[in-house]
Length: 132
Image 1 (spheres, rainbow, N blue to C red):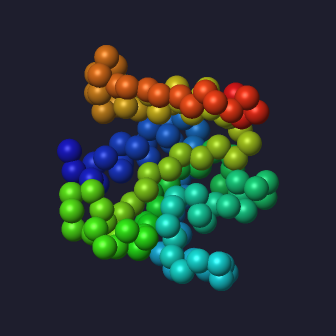
Image 2 (cartoon, rainbow, N blue to C red):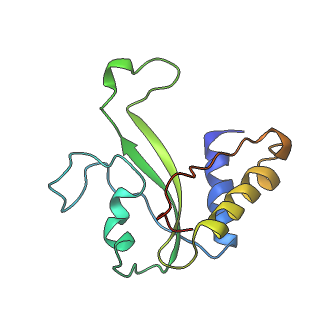
C-alpha cells in the first residue's frame, strides 16, 4: 500500500462516519506568533478545540503537514524525520473516547486488516480526575 492509498482510505473511512474533510494548514502558521512551524495536526485546530465553532462542523478529518526540529540531531535514522503528514480525526464536542476508540479500532481491523489478536492496548489508570 502506498502512502497516498493509506491517506485516501483514512479520509474516506472517517467521511463515511460523518466527518468533513478539511485541508492541511500551512507549515508556517498564520496569525500565530507563538511558534515557527505547524508541528502537530491539532495545532491549526486549537481555537476550535477550545470551543470556537468550526465552519465545517463538529466532526473533521485531515492530513496535516507537520515540521519538527526538536530532534533534528537524529534525523536520518529509521525513526526521525523533520517533515511528515499527521492523519487526524477530530470531534469538536460531538463524541468522546468510547466512540473515537471504536472508530480507530474499526479502521485498523476492518479497513487495514490488522489482526485483532496482535493489537496491544494500554491504558493509563493513574488519574482519578481524567474524564472517562
